[in-house]
Length: 403
Ligand SMILES: NC(=O)c1ccc[n+]([C@@H]2O[C@H](COP(=O)([O-])OP(=O)(O)OC[C@H]3O[C@@H](n4cnc5c(N)ncnc54)[C@H](O)[C@@H]3O)[C@@H](O)[C@H]2O)c1
Image (cartoon, rainbow, N blue to C red; front, side, top):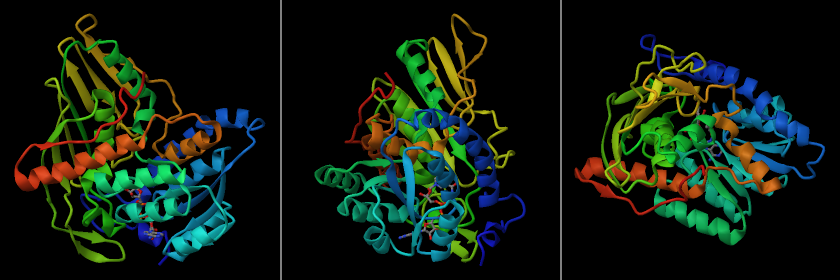
């Protein structure tokens, strides 16, 4: 089975999201921006003394976005790739000029020395592999989630601190200029007394891996995680969660596997209480028809709204690929477009920013505490569904994110 074979989409109409559709769109957008985003890095390259040696574990779909970004980053030296499907590790190493490739994390950790592990494996594997790598003294950038529960994530973070290494996790949505504009608009009180927010993200679901649909996967950690991070980043840590989660389609066709039983939610509605009677609502799922088929470069509709007594602002595009912010206030009721200049933000920037931080000390805006707050929201949403109750939250993070 070749990698290109695995891009086949099984269902004709409506189409699930396959790797070719999603990654083509991402790559067209991302690669153009990588060049732009790394111009600053190139200008500094003469002054850069140190590079962070990076090992990438998980050489599937998302590695095709990360590896070009990492290769273009002057703070990074790509050292090794690893995948339990050894052909994937080998072919990505060859394509991106990475000198070493391994079929198992133990061999990678015992092999060529590196500083930062970039974990792009199945969602269920992150916590275990992150723990292994922390014990081996590696810094971590992990795709979401960092861990499967708040407690496990807090233990990982404490252990990382004991070992003198850093732990960060996706998503990176708070890094975008649109997030900064919205945060500053709220800080300036331009919307007046806040009331509510709404955000939505969905598509028809991946067809290339089973893990999206089984325990530890689901639409909340794969999709809802973006809106949850963006909205808590803007409105502050949530105090409690009320949610409904469910399964719309009980089985899915997965390439190379056939029919699999869905045991994680593919549909979720989550209400957050941010305190002071400010509420937000996010919806996500693997059953959302999208006429643009996830090709977000041309997509411009609003996916997120924040409303107050004096104004309303709406994010154009997804929070992981935003285009602009439309703002209407009592003083200027006609919607005005802001933060629509060409920008360098791409969602796959996280590992490169971690490498930059390790070299220069410049801290990214995303933090592990924020990522773990979102992990707690996700597990609380499921607890709310199973108990029919509001679930209070314990965790918090440094806020405001943008000062
Ligand atoms: N694909 C996307 O568009 C996308 C976008 C953003 C984030 N993500 C996130 O990235 C992660 C990976 O998603 P994906 O779509 O690339 O999945 P994928 O199935 O295409 O790739 C995962 C890879 O990890 C490998 N793997 C699994 N367990 C391993 C282990 N123990 N050791 C080494 N390799 C192992 C698998 O063999 C596979 O090649 C998930 O957390 C997902 O939520 C994916």
